Length: 312
Image (tube, rainbow, N blue to C red):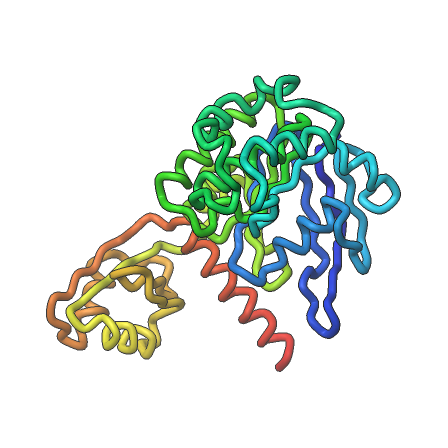
């Protein structure tokens, strides 16, 4: 039995369709990621799965319990950390932990082994009000409160948004330790670099899941050879490449431009010849390995093209 099963979930807000027939499953003990930008539908899905929101249609289960019929059972079995810090900011670290432990009929001591590694990092601030903690410490406190009743499934909605790079890395290290204790973890993030830290991911955009697989498999399924180029005038290079009829896709990517060509047999020599036609100063061209962000962009472009084709 899977820990989480989602079948054709639809959620609308007025005329806005936030979630469009989304389906996926999460195996027991898996670290599963929902990867997508703001407005992709991640939070709506999390609220449906944690019984805080009713879907318009479709079904979903958590640990075999229906999110509508068995909402009380699910609330006792899951931990939920929303994207916005939602603990009591006027209460101290210790008071927040004690409050949530009491709500679930347990104590900090009873499940101390589960939160020990995280708790030890925030223990020096036990008497500090939650609202006065740094961003990283707030996230660690929120994670402790979500774990205090030893949930079967942990839902984390963009837990590293707005925290520094070091805190992000520490947070994911903590998630891996929790996974080893048998907890199923479902996490959402807009950061593409965090996708590789998950066992499997679902790439989601505009309420639609575009691909579900392991990060390695998604990258291996990239259908074209990917090239990168840069020049002193990067904007002009981008314009020139996009006007070229041999280009299939072309987009800015950090200090480089990433692009693919229509021909399947293009090599770096041929690509260099294409790029050199406009006599750009400081031109550099190379072949690169696609990343998750490249895969996401390609799937988004393909999805947009299909929509345009249907409208013709």
